[in-house]
Image (cartoon, helix red, strand yellow):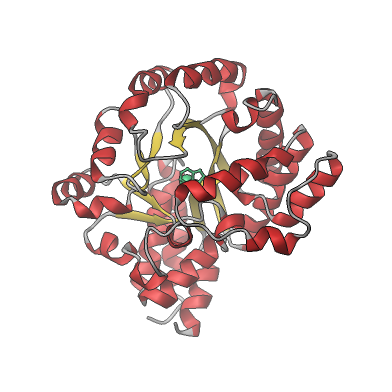
Length: 340
Ligand code: ADE
Ligand code: ZN
C-alpha cells in the first residue's frame, strides 16, 4: 500500500457501526479489573491471555468472550471499559460510534441491568462533551438464549429506554435463526426503535432473508455470505441495505482464510452499502482504523473505494440527514487533498 493511502485513512473521519463494548476488553484491563474485584483469572499473564486468542470459529471465540466479561462487576468497570474504547475512537478519528452491549451476558451472572447501562451511558455522555464523539447505544439480545429470556431483559431495560437507541441480535448464529425472535423484534418495533441483526456471518443467506422479512432490520451485521445469493444481493442493493462488515473478525473467526481472500471489494463492486468495523477489537487484533489499513494493503483498495467505505459508514448510521451530509462533505473535502 502506498504511504498516501495510510495517510488518507488516518485523516478521514469515520463512523463505526459494529462494535461490541465487551469485545473491547483488552487483556491489560481484564487483569486490572480482576484484581480490583478480587477475581482470579485462569491465565498467569497478559501474554498468556493473548496466546489463547486463537479461534477456530465463532463459538470458540464466544466461549472466551463471555468468560472474559466476568471481570466486569461495577458501574465504574463498565465506565472504564467504554471510556478506554472511546479514547481509541479519538485516536482513529472515529467521530461517531454505534456500539452494542449484551446485557444478558451480565444479568445472567447477577449484575443489575442498571449497573451495566449507567456505566456505559456515562462514558458515552462524557465522550460527547469531552471528545466531541457522538454515539448511539444498541441493546443486543443473545440468540443462543430463548425468546422468552429476551422478553425478560427487555422488561429490565424499560426504565432506561430513553438512553437506548435500538436493538440487535448476536451470539451463536447457526441453529439460532432470526425466525426464533420474530415476536421479540415485533415488540421492539412497537417501542419505535430501529433494529439490526447479525446475519450471514457463519449462517447462510436464508438467515439474511429472515432478518429482513421477519425482524425488519435496517442494517445487516456482517452479511458477507449474502454474496452467495444473487437475488438477495439484488434486494440489498436496491434498498441500500447497509452491511456492517468486520474484516479482521472474519479472519480471526475463519470465515475467510486470509485478509487477501476477504470479499469486501466484491461487496462494493456489487453496489452494496458495505462499511468497515472492528467487532471485538481486543480479541481480533485491530481497531477500526487498522481494519481499513489492512484491507487497503491486502485488497489493494483504491482511494475512491476507501472514500466510499467512509461515506457508507455515515450513510448507514443513525445520524440525522444534516449530520450525515456534514460528515460526508468532510470526507470528500479531506480526500481531495490526497493523490489517487
Ligand atoms: N458477539 C460478539 N461478537 C460477535 C460476533 N462477531 N458474532 C456474533 N456474536 C458476537
Ligand atoms: Zn458482532
